[in-house]
Length: 129
Image 1 (cartoon, helix red, strand yellow):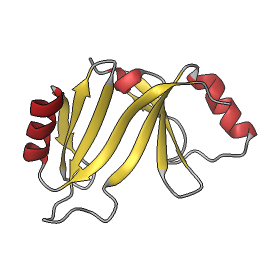
Image 2 (spheres, rainbow, N blue to C red):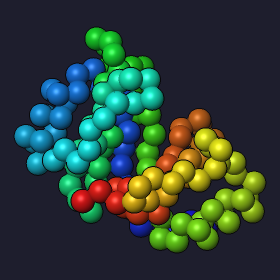
Image 3 (tube, one colour):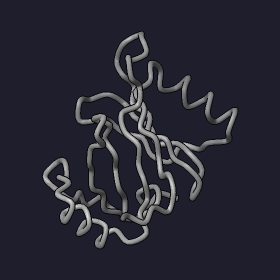
Image 4 (cartoon, rainbow, N blue to C red):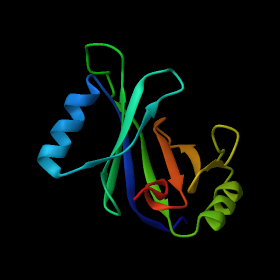
């Protein structure tokens, strides 16, 4: 069994990044933690409250909500390396070629029985403050 510390983040596709960020900032006090471009060239922002919850928001590039705007959910794990061993013993494949090393964290991606991608991270919020 994996020892989950908590829900780390939600990864969502949104219509308008700036309007969405403003809405979450004004209602919940979420701050912008990181900005950039996705591998497809779409802008993204990571917003949230340090140590509480993050949201990775990716602008979808069209004027409609995606049929399923949830891209993936992320869980922070208590002992990342032991958890990877558990996944391997259970025969659960890691996506994207295995463990991804980010600047301040490591992640592994798996898929649940419904096809939902789950990111498992070694550091809460990828180490963002």
